[in-house]
Image (cartoon, rainbow, N blue to C red; front, side, top):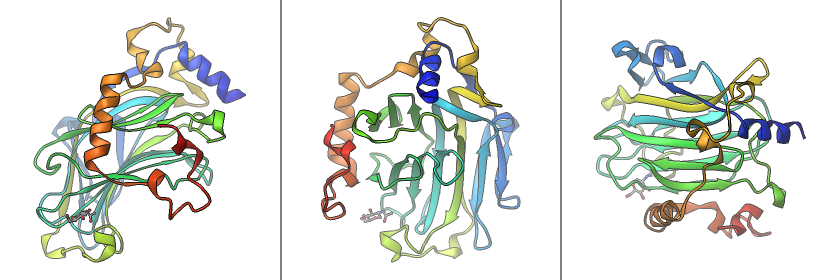
Length: 284
Ligand SMILES: *[C@@H]1O[C@H](CO)[C@@H](O)[C@H](O)[C@H]1NC(C)=O
């Protein structure tokens, strides 16, 4: 009930737009110097060598947002490495919205792994290859999280739309604030071809870079949200994302990606769910 009330409040108010500076919005949390913020806060890099990976997290917590980040992934032979970029709340019944980039041998495609956890429960993996080389340039990876949808996009093209299916008994993340996290680490026990291909440490250090963070989001602080404290009218263009959903053109694009680039979909994995697919899978 409280969270429903919050959702209503959020819808009737305004989010704040933050054109990011990494020095203000993030802190490097581990890696003993392997994570760096440079260029006056315009660029962040993480690196991994045999001794350690590295990671960062946002200074703010958010409860709903439209969050863009540009990433340039580890080039060359990145097999065994994983670059995770995700939103997560705290605790055993946490919510989480994941992008994970699983490295590969030179010339073989990265796997973009996505998942949504609600109340501590995940098991909602969808994986994709990309239609470009994600190591040559920066590309934009976005999460739109509002009370009705979690939409994952790559360069503005939606790849996944996790809908609020509470009416069918599926929990939806809407009351636990989340921070943004990222880390680069060694996962060669499973990441590349199921762990068959190991990290080539002669190629270390491995480096991934981040820039152009932009959050149009409700910042959560001491139990209140910037979205519920403002009295602005709901029609303001800056908070349109709180009601955003995919129009037919963008749905068409998402179908194109899913048809051509999706390599795993839990909703099609009948072997894994012999008792029946999860309820959210019955809705396109
Ligand atoms: C690596 O490349 C192989 C061969 O193209 C592909 O099957 C696989 O999905 C790629 N990604 C990972 C993480 O293994």
